[in-house]
Image 1 (cartoon, helix red, strand yellow):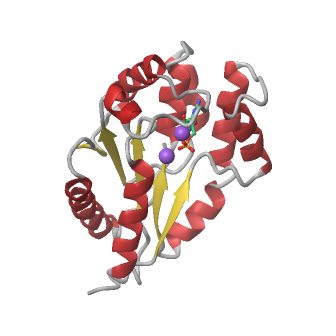
Image 2 (cartoon, rainbow, N blue to C red; image 1 turned 90 degrees about the vertical axis):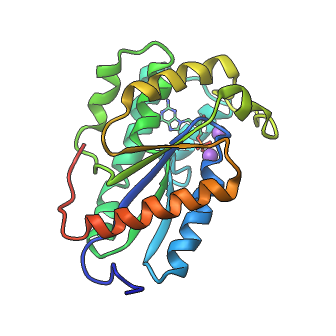
Length: 210
Ligand code: DGP
Ligand code: NA
Ligand code: NA
């Protein structure tokens, strides 16, 4: 059945990874695949720079404003909270969401600055729990080679190395690690399979919270 999510809820599929891990391109490819199969699906990303909180985050990332580490942490979290209601109604109405970054970015990037990891996790509690987290695994050095970094605040190899270590400590049973250094088409195929299985399996399962 091509439109297998016409009844039942949509799946919350999150892609995580370092900067330049290929997440954004893979999100786009996965989204068009799912839509082509007749699924109702939307692509989302965090930070969502379109809201007023998102604009503060964007200025911070561009080094146009300075905020202390806890303040920006809570803004990133608030940016997810302000989208929670819409996210829930989309999922309940049967739309699958393919999301580029989520709470795991929130925790891994802030913990990499030295903030206590439990403190970092606390404001994420109560956000919607993903049905599937795909971690695109690439070495920080390899990621940096891919056309270089764009010059935003966190785009430095030593910092990304620390982010990677924290990501590794966050893995749980909903995580699937995909080798992001494989050819783009191979990665794409693996994501298609993971997402297709996930959409089928989450039909009938209630939404839960982090
Ligand atoms: P992107 O738009 O995906 O390139 O993300 C922008 C940058 O912000 C990137 O370096 C990852 C980082 N980032 C994303 N989400 C969070 C978050 O919740 N907290 C922190 N501290 N950084 C984040
Ligand atoms: Na970036
Ligand atoms: Na990205």
